[in-house]
Length: 529
Image (tube, rainbow, N blue to C red; front, side):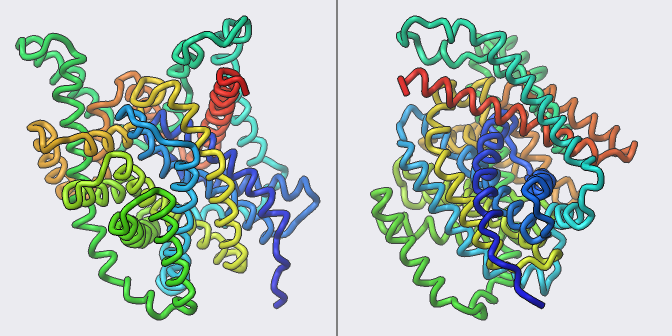
């Protein structure tokens, strides 16, 4: 069988799509604390574009989809960690964020590519979203039904964002006679009014959203009122800061530790030895050495911290790839938290370097899961893995180019707010700034640890983590996410899940992309660009 030609066109177009996917994933992920596998969405878009360009090749479609999807999980690794720096009142440059993105992305690909043969070909792990993308590409889009559904819902999300941010709130901005206006006013888009939490709740599903909402109910209707009425705290804000935020954050950390001990370590020990059997491992070792040197000098780190970043990325990329294959979930922020805890309490590194370390690990784990989903699609379609690897590298590099500017622009709105709750980054911030173990943080860790172990026994998945997040994010976010989860429960029973999955994905992409572009354009105007 002839080897398909190298798909330059697919990689170029896919790289542009990767940037767009990164933009909407970052915006939406900061709002709802999660980024969803973009394989199905990018598969439908890639089919439509390949057809528009006069092509029919499945391999071209697959490589375009592979390249495009990379931006989503790279953005996730950034938004789950980097906002902690801004919430701590510290600074980080756009160039530093670019370097973190590139380093984490390349480490993830370097560590995960050798796993393809073992996990996909030999072990035949499911990689559910990768298999779903392959099925979509195989079936094609007869009559353009899927494309119309996706693009129509994209349009709904985009029009909603424009109506909210431009027509309602931007006239005052466009009529500015000078740029002598505070950034806080300039960036007040009213973006807390959003369709994204409803659509996100649908994609998350009922179990996770019920646990999230239960955490919100416990916090806002029991802990806060009782603490205020007892006279221990003067108002609900002080209760939120003094009790529910450290308690909820502790639960996330405790559940992460339990998850890593119960699932992560056994997964790694079971099959990690096969790395030694992979061809070209010497070249991989040289590339790894080069990345260690790059990390050391680019971020002005000590050599031990750079080595810890690489070791952490190695462990977590491997475990992320395996767990993604088995469960279709990549708990990348959990892996970053584990390495962060080790770095803080064993080595005592500074705040900015701790967050950058966590970001590298988080991005590597996310990219590893994304790449393996894509390799599953390619294996089922017969796409040369070298072509997909080239697409993954191109997608990671192109998405990295925008992450620094995007995060600085978002920071002008404010992280840890109703607009951008950024719950994972809040947990990272709490760990970094902790001068020990406050009582409620320690209590939360113990509770989260126990609940996570019970959750594994009763197959509750990440419910304890969701409960902890629900305790400290604004309830204004928890309610629409819960409604979206309940809609998913009803739609699952009506057997219309996949249709509305496209609808939800399109709405998130439309509103998220327009929202991100508006933030970037406002930032450019404010800074005189």
